Image (cartoon, rainbow, N blue to C red; front, top):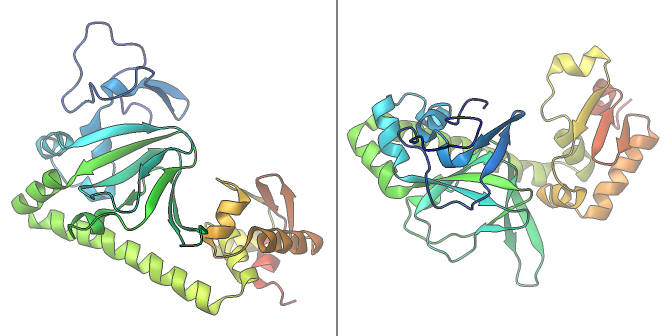
Length: 269
C-alpha cells in the first residue's frame, strides 16, 4: 500500500488531497505501510477505496464522494471497535493490523468467529438491517480501521445498481465462508480442522513440491483454537502430534511444514 498517503514526511502548511483525513485522529498518527512511514492525517481515502474490490469500478468523483462518509480509527491492541447492542450504522475495513469478531456466552466463554487482516471488510450485511451489533470486534494488534457510513453507501446504491450487486456479491462470499465453517465444525475432526488451517493458503503444487513451508500464526494459539472451535489444550496436543510425526516443526508462532503432501493426507499413510 506504499504511496496511498499524500506524503512520507510531516505536513508543513500544505493542504490535504481531496478525501484525505484531516481530523478526528490522535496526535500520533504515523503508521507504516510496507516499510514506508506515512501520515494518516493526509491519508488518501479515495485512492485506498479504489483498491478494494467493492469500490474498484467507481470513478474518482464517486470515490471522493464516498470518502466523505468514511473515517479512519486507530485502535490500540485490545481496544474494542464495537460491542453487542451498539447501533450499527457503518461497516468496516481493516487497513492494517488484525481484528477479531467474537461472541461471549452467558457463562463468560469467548468464541472467536472470524479473524480479519488487512483488506478484509465486515458488518456490511448487518448495517442494512437496522439492528444493533450482534457480535463484538476487538483489535488483536495495533490496527487502523476504515469505517464506511451507511448513508454514503445508500447514496451510491441509489445512483448505480451495479454497486448494489457488488455489495451483494461480497455479502454472499462472507455467507459462503460461514457455511463452510459450519460444515467443517460438523463434519471434520479437530485434527482435520488444524491441518486445514495450516494448509489454507497452499495450492496442490505447494503440497507436492517438497519444500519447507513456513506458516506464521498471526495471533496467539488460544485465539486460533477458538476460531477453530477447539480448546487451546487440544490445539497444542494436535501440534505436538504432528511434530512427533515429523510433519511440522513448531517455533513459537512459526509453524514449519516439512511435508505438505503427507500433512494433507494425515493420518493416512
